[in-house]
Image 1 (cartoon, rainbow, N blue to C red):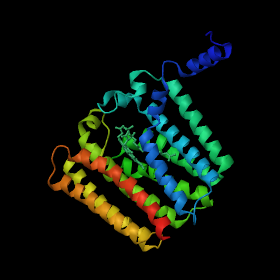
Image 2: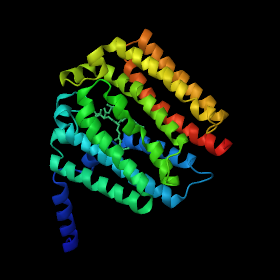
Image 3: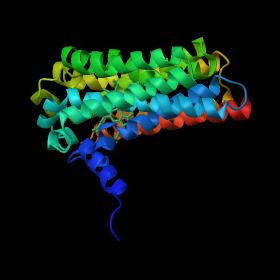
Image 4: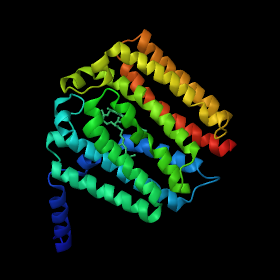
Length: 306
Ligand code: HEM
Ligand SMILES: CC(C)=CCC/C(C)=C/CC/C(C)=C/COP(=O)(O)OP(=O)(O)O
């Protein structure tokens, strides 16, 4: 059957826009698994901000806006890191390194979805959330990626604030203001980030050393980094008590978070004192399960016991 003019022309426009890149290349630069966990924390922040169920339309708009801007931040990170990504084992298969996606197309894509996300938040959520999300995007894509990451071993402690913002963004999307309880959720993710990343950084120490990236295992050694992971994991356990102690969460959360933090502490202790070769990556992978389950327990506790 002959193709209609519209099919040919629309396909022509699409291929002109995408070039050699397939949709998978654009999808990959958004760091989808990271953004999905970020959105889970934003969803929980939104649900804990209200009694009962949040407005479905408002929640949908917030998730779309925050998701688009987080994806845009990740795409800018791929663009700005493409030179070092080409030299590291872990990242050398990325779309811009392979040449599947050009820098200009990645920049255009990142800008398009970031602007779209800001517009959704500004038009259908509120300006506070739109601006807070924009600040998080700049914090991660520029301040962390372009400066902190290359400047100091404390890069991810400070840069972690951007990735810890989503629970606050979900909360302000529902209420239009910054509640102290929402900052507790930010503090949990902020405290979780160093053990999360430093475990991976231990495993990838040689990669980061090769590109002169001042990650803690490179600047201060693996033993010191393991001690910092253990100390931050203890701190995380204490910080996770705050939602219960302030009355935001209840016994179900206290039990669940204590079990999860006990497990995280075991991983961090084993990494420090009884490490085998795969323990750093096992700790990194557990950190992701830990944060996901922690926020699911926060949500369950809110609806079962609030
Ligand atoms: C400055 C803060 C952070 C740093 C430096 C960091 C670092 C990293 C790195 C280097 C990876 C491996 C990525 C890869 O090899 O493709 C990773 C994976 C991941 N991170 Fe983080 N992270 C941070 C914050 C967060 C936050 C806040 C979340 C979610 C709330 C998160 C969730 C994840 C997830 C789900 C993965 C697995 C991605 C995959 O398997 O594709 N990270 N992180
Ligand atoms: C709007 C908003 C909430 C923005 C922040 C969202 C965001 C995408 C956070 C990403 C956290 C993360 C995986 C950082 C790793 O960057 P890296 O450059 O150290 O990792 P890489 O070497 O794997 O690229």
